Length: 63
Image (cartoon, rainbow, N blue to C red):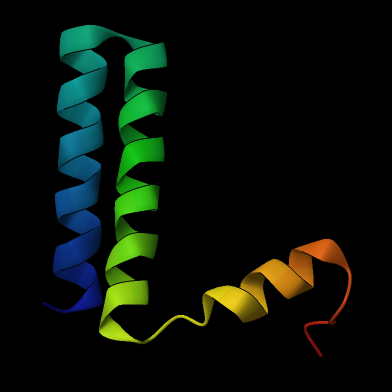
């Protein structure tokens, strides 16, 4: 799935949830989608969770 198709799908899901359930529910759906994407990347091995946590804790910089 390329980036354009993925962006379109994400936009459609968020638009439908905003229309059907309201703004705050749309934000909750967006949060769940982001968490799901992070979990998926972690399982695929394309995201180093320890590196991300180290960067947020200040033990390691992003540069």
